[in-house]
Picture 1 (cartoon, rainbow, N blue to C red):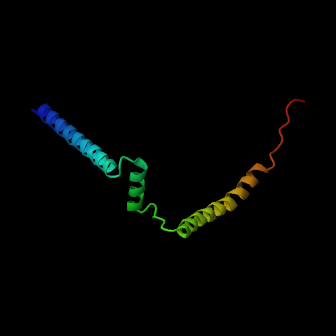
Picture 2: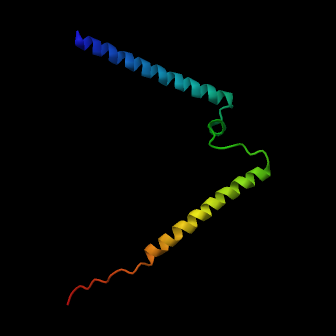
Length: 99
């Protein structure tokens, strides 16, 4: 009797997983239909809804965001470059071979 219960449980789990997969596929197709089959627009709406990006309404908003990103890149450069320079210009001991 034990193998039958495992078989029924496995079939139930498989059915639930397939149902979730079909539901997810239908949700994605419906969302793509809603945005006129544009994948990039769907991704943009998703990122705005989850707070990853915020919509820019004016050119000033856009340049302010770009300026902030440039400042972060500059800070990263000023931190990483001295470490890289120290690593590259480090004097290495010379190893003699032969007589």
